[in-house]
Length: 266
Image (cartoon, rainbow, N blue to C red):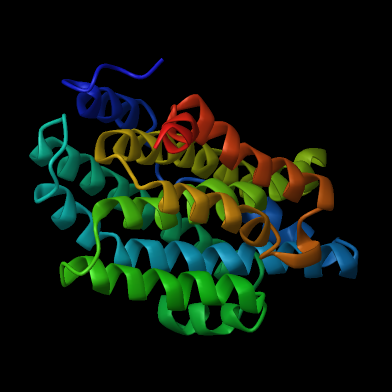
């Protein structure tokens, strides 16, 4: 059960403190040695997912700052400055995730590029168009709207936490963890496992923000209508059963938080 509104940001801060890890400390040498020996079809599937996370994590790190600024001006039951602080903590997580996937791109996938920006550009060639649209078009556009004060925190959280992290990232992480369960790439799997743990509290934090900002019924409907499309953004790199499960999870989260019932009542 989530902490009460008066101190739930501190609850998330304590959670973050327990989850700290160093993306530079994960040993990727065994993975680099094993990568060329994997079957070509498996390497293509893994490249789609890992390159996708490389591009996406860079994007969320780059565009999260306006969310903290919006939290400072949004009326909430919790102290706005504390909520903004938790957004800062999340941005630090995203920076760590971006570093991990850049290391994987360079050391395991061996994508060309002498800098993170060059490797990110190389990664884009392997990423489904739907993922690029979500993270390089929709997310920057929404962050710009937030920064200009033309949209609210609820709309930002709905896209960022519920759709991008709660569906797209969740689907990709489950696909990676399932695929790598045989120990073929132990460092990559350990890194993805740690990222997935971080994303859990991000999603919980976003859900709590929604319960306090009281999103409109139309926004709830919009999240639900996007779920299936977002889960399919990875294409065949994510198994159909995983896509279906993750899409259903969006409705489950909103229901547990009482948001679907609130929509019906409205």
